[in-house]
Image (cartoon, rainbow, N blue to C red):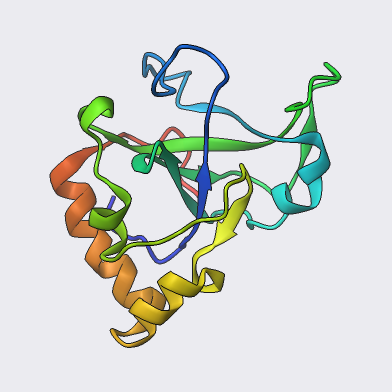
Length: 163
């Protein structure tokens, strides 16, 4: 995969367990899953559009790139605080999650993301906008980050190719 023209979002994922980085064995079926948000963040979960790409950050490192399948926000009915989610497909995964590329390497600059599990439209993050607006904007970032991702991880075969 080299077309990152839909890469517009980033989201922090964290867990209240002893697991340092979220991951699971990648097989043909596990590439598609529900990415969760807090139930109170349902409106935020609805913001990325069908086909958009999102960088998953964990502990200031980028570990995955996922693509949204549709515009539907799901509720798993569990009543759990993180029962809201969106259907996504993993497109890229860091080679070594414990040594995944740091935010500064991925974004080309230091970015202070708000401390939440919400999806952030990259151009709305002031640090991102300030740095990349002088270097060609979102399109220039998408071109730049392609090289970093190619070097630091693997692109997975898509199960469903969205047009």
